[in-house]
Image 1 (cartoon, rainbow, N blue to C red):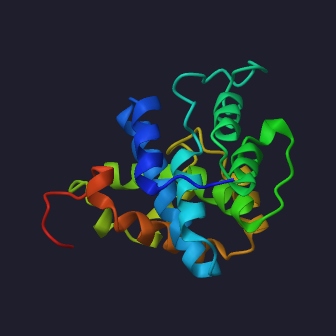
Image 2: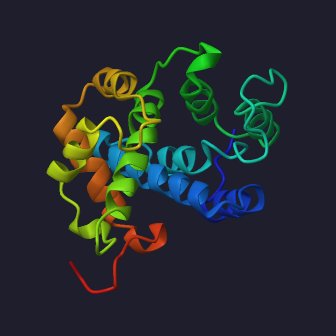
Length: 197
């Protein structure tokens, strides 16, 4: 089982995903998982590429009720055909909670804990007048978290369970993910006017 290089993984993402917003989401999750890999002294390449590719088939096969091809079933078959590592495959499979695959490793748990939180953080930057993620603070993200009407599709209770399962305090988790995303603000399209924060 071999891990693709970052360039190979990104080429695959570009081949499969045309949506800019979905690409940005996958880049954000990659950055968050790389930060967690450093925190846990884990394999940063494995964790990052898992985050980068976790939603690879979502644009093409968004119908999760399709038990043959629905997300993430198509990408899981592809990853197995390509000989990707079992840890990557299991984490992607476990992040689709409806499949009932238990989350066993820290990577499994970190992927779910970071997945939707990255969307909340991006949305927090989008509504700022300067659209600059580097000027977003944890307290701003927490305020948006408490506002159930803001990014209403994010199930706060379920996501809090994922964060608790990872075993990291909520504020610390938000800060780690936010800082990781601030590091790629330009790629995410939320660097404001380009002047340093």
